[in-house]
Length: 158
Image 1 (cartoon, rainbow, N blue to C red):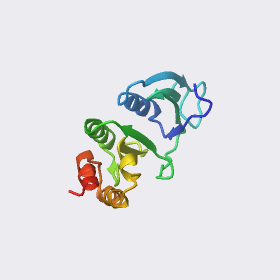
Image 2 (image 1 turned 180 degrees about the vertical axis):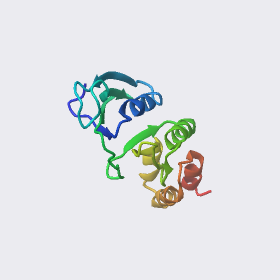
Image 3 (image 1 turned 90 degrees about the vertical axis):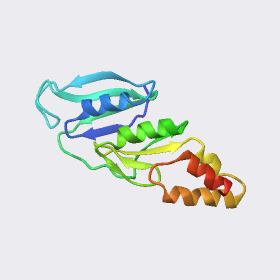
Image 4 (image 1 turned 45 degrees about the horizontal axis):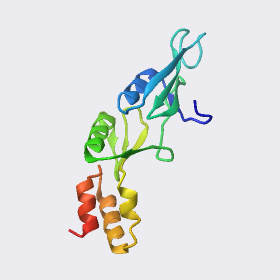
């Protein structure tokens, strides 16, 4: 287990959310479900209090805090995607019943913010040819979901 890990606050859907997230990425699993030992803000005795889970090899905690808290862009989860198929799959799954934002960002059905980004993007933006990098940035700023072929065309000046 990591010394530091994100804790996601839920009104009552911590276990549902953790199960959803671990279904999306390899090297993911539910590690432990802790139930309330007594009635409290997180729920009645016996209900789920928190879920420790691993998502793509990293430790997380989902906590049922009993009241809804709003997430915002200040903290989001970045998923580095190897190809368009991975972008499309994660965008579809995480975006369903959520909100599609811009520049590869979305808010999922639980209100958590995600960035679904192609692995190639930092390389394209760091090209020493400023004209290429600027064309890519212009394509990024116009995108909702990233399209690797469109980014490559911008890079190539097509």
